[in-house]
Length: 107
Image (tube, helix red, strand yellow):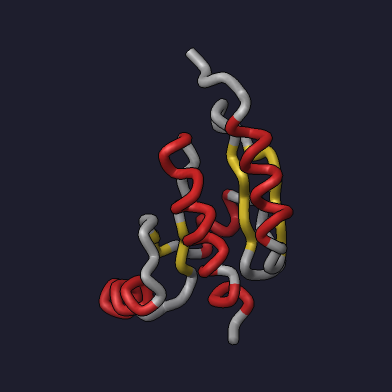
């Protein structure tokens, strides 16, 4: 199984656990299958969060990351607080999410 696909169950679980607390996930698909393939993929994996179709510009704007999956944890202030290349254990991501959710909402 592709590493990005292997991480989906943990992402879905994290989304379900922390979405009501202000945590959200935005997936970016870099595959070339188009919207129909993406819809089928999201349905097959029961992905509850939005997935966008990305391109080379997305990769470049986020630092030309070197592998997939690459995950970014963005704080409430809009800055990238963590970046992981490769599949990470759920507890590593969850710890970082919990930490950031304790921060006050700006404004």
